[in-house]
Length: 186
Length: 339
Image (cartoon, rainbow over all chains, first blue to last red; front, side, top):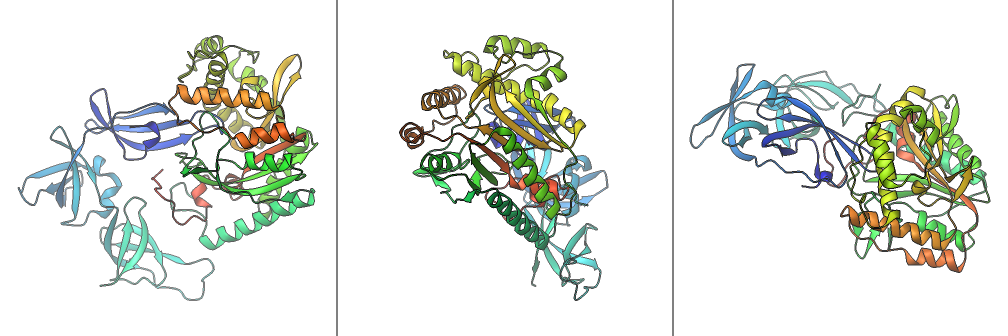
């Protein structure tokens, strides 16, 4: 892959190890060469390294396979998923699941990533639908500034939603940004 | 306070008000200075070729990476001093302070020296800051870029080093040059490759921290000739330097200004060197803007100073944000990746 295809969550193979880009910064003097300053995490050891690539360089994408699995339960340190056809279960450490834990509802379908048969990561769908379990009541009249309010969804994740959203309603959330997208009618 | 994660930022209605006030202030200032506003095509047959700026294609042409070529052709044809707030596009430039589409304020003043163009930058920055409720920049200072290189590296470069010498010195200063083209058969291509890579590595490792430490407004000027881009050369204290400046506020690159190059033969030679460097690092071949070169030859470009200033970054600074997407009014961006 070309260095300009680098982005957060890209999977790379370096010296025979799979890495995921966890942070990505593009800097470039207007007339200069672009620098892609990345933090990359070894998907097996969890070690995080700094690497910088330059415009024009090429990279090797990691050969990561994904399998559809269902989220079962968490022990806090680890999350367990099950292949609903073979009933095979795999465990991912909480450090690997990261912020995606905010959106893991029981029985949610996810893509579990395997590198050489070993579970190394999780890829969630870009959007999930979750129920609002707590929300401040909407305040009328203040339309100029306060167009959103704090609410909590069933996993405990807190999110900004429009004033008209009520407890018990379901909302679509973008898992990449963690932001509210829209109300989902039942 | 504005956070540092995507999605946070100014409320949408405030963004609209911010852009409205800034556009009015910019236009008001440049018109009051006697410039006419122009609106040139976004889709063009050829772009101003740069070693590391890739246009988005819009067959059979491109989306403009800058309005420079077309505005200079209007200058050749008697437009007088002109300005434009234009939408420009640069493929794959995505980050906290980069976006594939952004706004350039570009202006050309006939017969003006670079010092006047620098004052324009200062006035526009102040106008935008005041509109957004931020105090004007407390002080501006101007430095020769080679003096800043010496201050930060502890090594005085002359500015006319050939590629192999510059690569050696740079590596010794902890900045190995990693760029294709250092062994190109053409000395112009080698020189352009080495100086472009040196400036990129040095900016990241030394200039950015130096600017962060200084804060405020800084103009960096008198570039080495290999980095002249489309500016004229002149002699400064016995060295050939490019009549060019870059302006920074709070360490963020905001503007680029040139005493515009008028010699068509020199212009064609610089385009050829850029094309050679692009070939060396495998970038797509771009057509030479023959219409632009023909106008330089056929009508002649009047003596002028030209500046391009990034409006999105200016507004980001004006409201104390640190990401463009915290002030942008783009609700969706094609193919936007997380950053």
